[in-house]
Image (cartoon, rainbow, N blue to C red; front, side, top):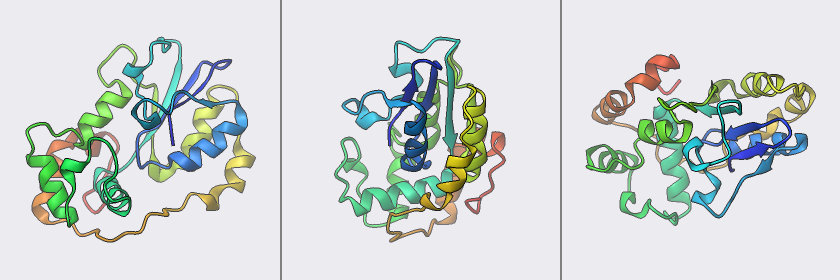
Length: 200
């Protein structure tokens, strides 16, 4: 569940939380990718955190519909007793309360688009080259690895059943107001990746 690098290929997988990181890590580790650093940000390092990334580095990662991403993040944090640095202030008894804290807070530290732009270096000279939809993770990973001359088709096909959400879903209801706030604050993600408001 961390950002990984392949030095010989100069290829970097940027792991954006709740986008199949554990599954992707299992595949990439078979082909020479190694975790960059688990001690910083729990391994979730973005382009701007790494001084070895250049314009020639092949960078890739995955994005998820902001609605399903928030549902997954809330249930993950809740199932782990909110025991993660920086998230305790968003601790809530319901998903809607959690979303209200995020999108009405002046800092909005975990607002999807803010995190996304920072991780993938959006708007910078080093902006991530390929960001695939999590909902199409199998084909996305195949394409990413083909770009650095790695054929992982067999391994991906064999591992397809591994990518399952293991987090207990306690709450998945989002009010119309919070859906509106998620959309308004992440409009460019919805439009660029053709996401809709039902989470798909």
